[in-house]
Image: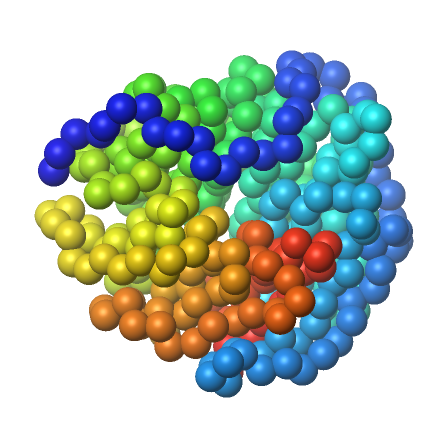
Length: 345
């Protein structure tokens, strides 16, 4: 396919941050148990437009914080937020929507959590962000397990985990394959532009990475070698692989959704949702795509891109979305400082 065009305009900017080195982060770590300024989970029962999903609860966030990242499992969500104070502070919480409570896990000065991911069946949580360091938390004890630098102070934008291997991309214009058990990594040089999204294949054999200019690369998980590369028809803000490994989906920040054959990279379908998109994900075993855009989360039929349903709150716009590993739970952060938990019926 055609090569990338000139440098793309940056359509979405995170809050301006002061970068720091990864050294000294642990010294500013404070672990706090119990509930805090986030209020308890509020249960509800609001159906989606077509009744395919139900909003079961809301997590009211603090008005003085910006929710910057989410991770979702079958019992709760991890929430990474930034306190809007003179000293920037990153706060990590876990909201258990089965018990109805919210717990603060960590509070780190001069940091920001840009990406979160559960692994080991939800028993562990990995965080990364502004400093370029990774931290692993044990979700049973809610305590820090390990922390180590990866990208020399460059912000990390996205993370995915398969088994004990984490795929990481960010502003450092490199991809990293990190063994979380051995604390070793493979660094893969990138191109001209920062990487914004990554995801593993269902069998964990390759990592798909995409930059904002539209370059998409397939990397071998064991060696980091490039298995394939193509340029999408648009800028890329999010990329996903279907559960059968046969199809790729790419979302543009301008509202364009495009699917490709995962092996030949030929374009299958394309549709414009006429709305700004932040993320896209396949729903395992359902044959659907979930697309988070400013007016809601659209559920699309993956083979036709037909809109089947829309999950939205009438009083707020959607900012972030994360889907549980089994595809049954969708967590959405809204611009009214709440996080909604949707279950698929």
